[in-house]
Length: 228
Image 1 (cartoon, rainbow, N blue to C red):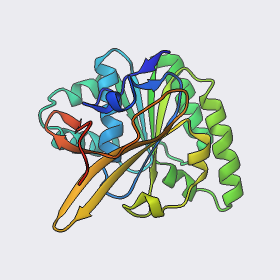
Image 2: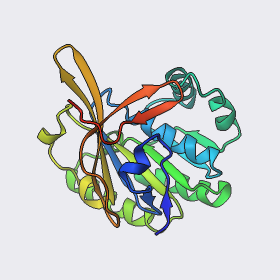
Image 3: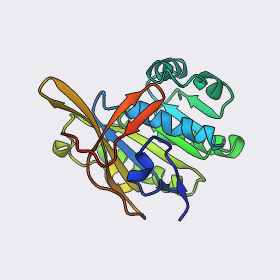
Image 4: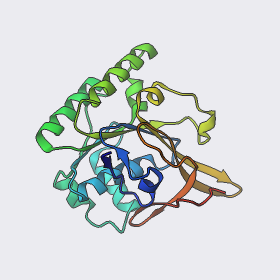
C-alpha cells in the first residue's frame, strides 16, 4: 500500500507508516491543542520531501501563519523560503464556500502539482451555512470530489472542549477516511498535549493516546509512553 508520510517525529509510527495515499483526514481538537502547527508541519515535511503543499486558511492570513509557525518552530529556519517558493502555498479565500475551496484545490493541483492539502477549518465553513442539512450534503459532495483529486488532505475541525469524549459526532467524522484527535489535557497545574489516531480506513494503527510536545524543530510524538 502506498502511504503519505506525515513526517512529524513519531506520528508515522502510530500510523504504521503513514496515511494511505489519497485518503482524507479530520484533525479534531479544542482550542490550543496544536491543530494549526500539526497541519502546517505535515505540509512543510512534504514540501521538503518534494511534495508541494497547499494550506487553505479561512481565519489567519498567510503572513500571520508564517510568523506564528516561525516563532513556534524557531529551529526551522527556512519556513519563509519554502512558502515564498510555493512549495508550500498559503491561500486565504475571500469566501468560505466549499465550491470556492474546491476550485482552488483543483487549480493548484493542476498548475502547481499539489500532493498535500490542508483546509483550516471546517468550523469556519459551517458558519457560512444557515441550514445544517445543507452543510452536511455539501460537505459530503466536497469529500466525494476530493477522492477524485490527486492529493491527500487534512481538514481541521474545532472541538467544543478539550475532552473529546464529550463531543458529539459531526458529518466530518463519517465522511472522512481518518480522524486524528489532538488533546490539551489538564492535570493539577499542568497541561499535557496528546494525540490519538481515532480511525484510519484501509490500515491498522496504534489506538492509544500518547503525549506529544512542541520542540524548536517540530512536534515530537512519544510513541509507547502514557499520557499520565
